[in-house]
Image (cartoon, rainbow, N blue to C red; front, top):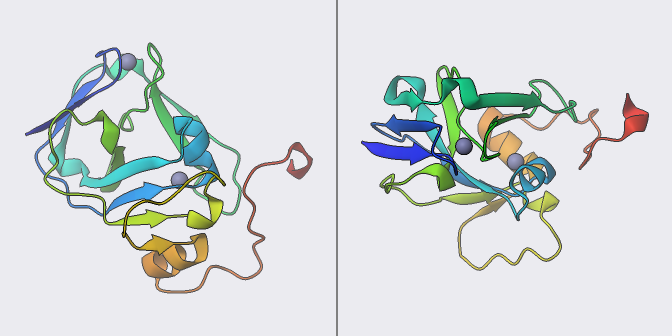
Length: 159
Ligand SMILES: [Zn+2]
Ligand SMILES: [Zn+2]
């Protein structure tokens, strides 16, 4: 079992397996959520995941939609502010890899949303890098809808 927990230890969970991918996302929203240059997220199936404690601590925030549904959702511990897994994941979902207390047995395989990365973000490894359009094509097997304007952040004017 691979254990995970938040900063204060209220939220604890375990996974029996991680299926990947293991991506480091540099999008504007992951940067804000983490307060850093991005978040390493590891792909997990809900059937391999078990929340052990802290269900009442997990809160979620859905950000205004930038491009298309679903909304970017941030799950976090209301006691310490750490990111957490979602309260009730289903199917495939992603866990912030920094929460893991044990090795998941895999390493990051790519950087994504590199066209959103901070100017000071120096990529110091040889992992493949994907822009928003490139990762969209990889995941969906088709091009990012050309009529959707790519924006890095939400403006109040958009409401
Ligand atoms: Zn916490
Ligand atoms: Zn992101």
